[in-house]
Length: 389
Image 1: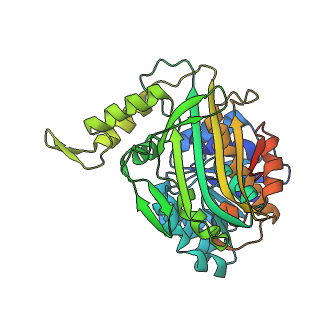
Image 2: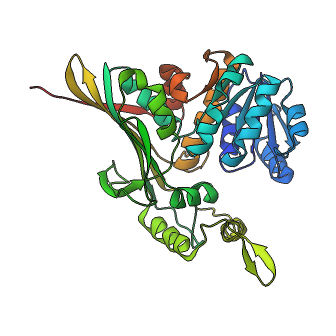
Image 3: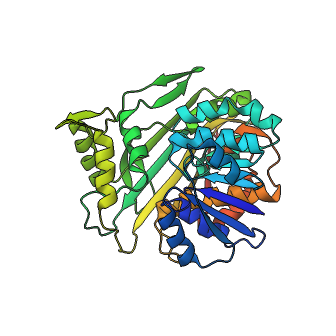
């Protein structure tokens, strides 16, 4: 079995690559990355005979097609803006596909390729990290227990006590985070999507420690794109996504966004066109890497309300993720990179049979996925609240 990880040398892609090396049936893993030096350094560090390195520019359609040809699965860990050409190449070459999410709008664009993907005989999974990804399967597990579904609320609580010398440490792609801070979140209600102002919907939510009580806000996320379609047969009426960032991080990034660093509109600076967003991203890339032991936590949660046996029921499913000491990586890297790899293995094994461009909740078998997730100390729990009268 041959799996390609695009962006495999990146922060999340490298976790997916490392996970794949632990599956005996995967005999060939290609780290495909624009930054060939970083890819080769990762291959050297992992020291696996399964790994090969290929430089790639995903904007070069011909080069991408040649890379994909004959492989079994492509895992896209590149910036979500590049997912469209990758999926088109996978359809052309008849290769299964999974990505880390498309921040709502890209996911909806990729879903339009459903018929083409199905005709090509491939499965394309839209959003297979932590959230989207794990949360989609938690929602599926709850929805399957209900006759009718009224609402699905996705909640992500984050804390991070990792010592850092850098003035700002982004838990994942700063470009994606800036989009979450500046683009309108979408809430599904009464059969339509309703845009909300960025950074609104403040709600204090009680998460397990070490996150604890935290203020969450609406965020633009792919679950709000797929759940209304995936669960429409059960009458779903409401879907939202809220995230609680660590307080200090939220304050710092909001300050930078208010200054204009969230904008990708070029400014004229001494005769040169400069994107404020790219300046910020470059400055963060130039920061020396932190070597402190990670001390973060993610709480991935879905709260699903509906009816079972004619009675109102609320099901809360969640996974509390801590740093993975075996690899000395953060909770955020673990719960993003590992699920992508698990989906890749399930696709390569033939355990996923639905074809087309789909949310994980429509194609990934829940129980086998959660069993694999537990191998990496990520355990799902369920709480049911049932009306007695």
